[in-house]
Every structure is written in structure tokens, then in C-alpha cells.
Amino acid sequence: MELSSVLKGEVLVVSPAGDLNAASCGQLEAELASHAENGCRRIVLDLSQIRYVSSAGLRVFLVAARRHGRDGSFVLASPSDAVAQILKMTGFDRIVRVEPSLDQALAAAAT
Image (cartoon, rainbow, N blue to C red; front, side):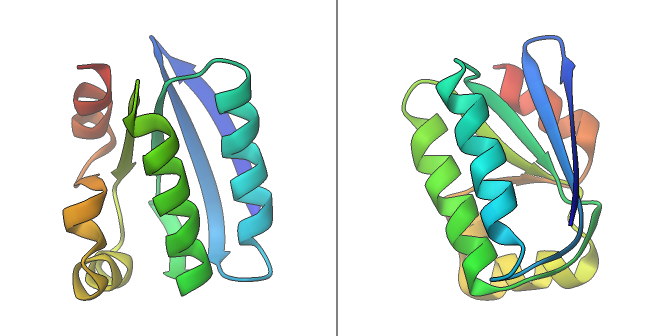
């Protein structure tokens, strides 16, 4: 999996690419934890380049949402139709905020 991060105002946008499964989710989890340890409180996870999310990937979302939900924000942005369906079927769309576009996610995370 490839990862990139860019700061947009006060919100950090983390953009993984590929499949988010048991083999790759450790990298994303470490990246998100590192940003949290460095004081980043507002994160948008841009899912536009993610093709598939396994249960291990969903766990990463849950951990990040709990970590940042206390005193910040964690928003998922731009899931593909397949990923959006997984989020809906598992109920994660009711646990973690999901926005259809990066701009909407940035606005939601900034408030």
C-alpha cells in the first residue's frame, strides 16, 4: 500500500492507495498513530484510491475514530461504491463520519 499525507489548513489528509487488508493495515495504523502522537487532532482519510477494505481495515478506522473523536475529528472521504457498500453493510457509516467528497470531509473535520 502507498500512503501520502498533506496538511490542508488545520486538517491532515491521509491518502492510502490499494487494498486495506490484514497485510497492509498495520502501515496505515502506524501512520495514523504517529500523527496522533505528534498532536494532530483533525484527520481526513481519503479513501478514493482504496479498492477493498477487510475487517482488519475497519478496525483501523474504529481505533482512529475513537482516538480522534475525543478531542478532534476523524472523517472518511470519497469511498468508492464498493468501499461505501462495505461501510454501510457493517454499520461503520453510523460509527465513523463518511463524506462523499474530500471537500465535504475537510469541512466536516474543520468544525
